[in-house]
Length: 283
Length: 157
Image 1: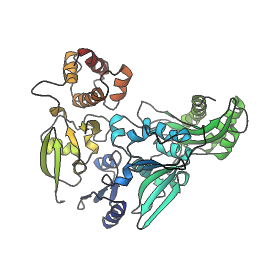
Image 2 (image 1 turned 135 degrees about the vertical axis):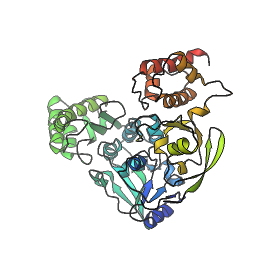
Image 3 (image 1 turned 120 degrees about the horizontal axis):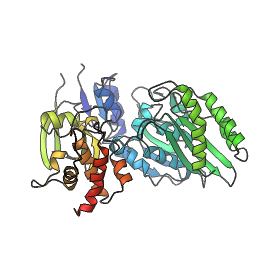
Image 4 (image 1 turned 90 degrees about the vertical axis):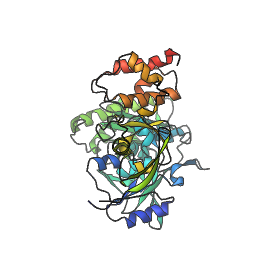
């Protein structure tokens, strides 16, 4: 086994340097809820562990004057679940955070860690896509932002390059009066999703007037279908319109048979989850 | 072998100056170096809850925490709950309700429930179930556990 080391830098720049100096098996450590479980199981090796827990700027959530919210990568799920900065449709992210695992894991796990691991059945990815969030990344001398939709590339694959870390999630303001809804189907409370739906929408009496919709757990990355969104917000929301939107979404899924459910089951339940989520939004 | 590192942990009100492996989990340090075996090694994956301890009063998974990352926090294990030989109210309630079967999950249950009651002294059944949803009891003795925790509020403690 390679020599192990532990680092707890005070700044993002130091963290990036420590990762680069640590070699190929160096890993950034968020709350530990994922990485330490993988280390315990022998599924990953780490020579250097670079804890991000000592970097103050990563622990904060801040609402900007334009209504966007910057959630530091080390914010715990517990704090994001009750983050009063997330308003209107932005609250889809808080709703997703509240449904992650259980109390002790929400006390440990961080949004940056979850996003960087990119489990396709995790709760944040579809919520971040529906909220049109951007992922802020720091590397050697650079900070860049990638739209959540482009960040999640496939099964556990992201836009992160070597020696880069997620530093924040930037959530743009949602339309006035919009709502954020997150619904997931799982075997038992606290499990990863069989399938999940994140909505960020505005509505009037009979119709959805604007919507962003993403499905989790049914492909390598969140599935967002713009034609389905256009259909859902294109007129009175009757059964026919809902069915047609559901079909468009199901056609774009790439689900697998796994321990939680079959691919066929996932295709069947997604339109129902969509309907339930829309009902929860009062449509 | 990797060189050990110096770590100062505050455990159950005592400062413990230790040398630990760089990647040692809090669970392994508590059990193997401090002989505090109340926290159990169950799944070692953060799922079962048998290793639950309190960090600054909040329940966390000791198996997913690195000891080297816990220097800033006050760590409480089940061994630290009793005061002068008197068990905490939730411990007394679990005993009174016969809510312990094999006992493997019990220390985690005690700490999750203790943290809940510290924040919310009169929880509902639903709130107790939510707070304990990360503590698996393979004897499936949940009913008595939940009854006992809800009952703490009624014991005037």
